[in-house]
Length: 261
Ligand SMILES: C[S@@+](CC[C@H](N)C(=O)[O-])C[C@H]1O[C@@H](n2cnc3c(N)ncnc32)[C@H](O)[C@@H]1O
Image 1 (tube, rainbow, N blue to C red):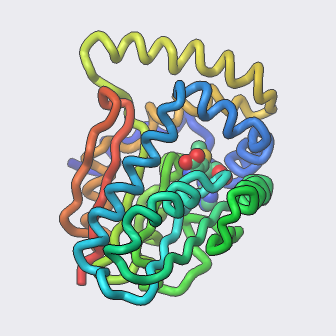
Image 2: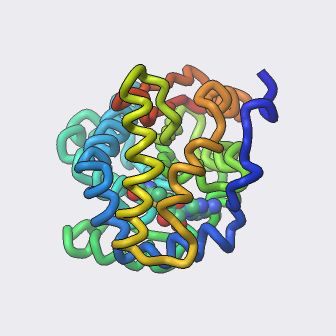
């Protein structure tokens, strides 16, 4: 299947300036709305992402002295915090220390992430400003590279995947959590109504912004690459054993793959 056939991004402006301004404007309300509009499911989704990453990692890092993870488009740092939280459970399997890095190109998001990590007394997390399509890290550095609800926002998602893979070490894990239009019978039409009508109205009312961020959300999901295309991008960019776990009636999915050794 050709990559071009699966895209319809003409109507969605994903220029870096627009995306940066939009997330900068909604940053103070991001956590509240994220929780509220997902009826608390966003936390569970991130838990699932992190659990799968550790499960995949544990196969070949036992005995290493340090595990280092990167979360791309980290926003207010929730995946970093969840990675830290689950570490306590899996630490004995690894036998080393954990170092966490989150990267995002919106300074306001990073400021909130740092504050949240400080409040939780997480001392092994660093939040760095940078673009997911041109990551400011050396190649082959991280044991695991994650992204949650960020890839869809990149003007060139394939480049985002290539960058995540580049900074991941051979044998390490790349994991992508992203929405997709659900086709689940009956549920799909109800969800579409919620996603396209109710969510933008609530989102805009709570997080007033000039970029219509909560209308952009469903539009960007509709315009995003099909799951098969994302999986294909992952394979083309050097990942193997690529698996997709559909979640919550197909509203989103977790893609996970290992960098070829
Ligand atoms: C929907 S939020 C997701 C935040 C977080 N990962 C979560 O789970 O809640 C998307 C984030 O992606 C960031 N982002 C979008 N495009 C990016 C890019 N090219 N480089 C770095 N960050 C980007 C935005 O600034 C925003 O913080």
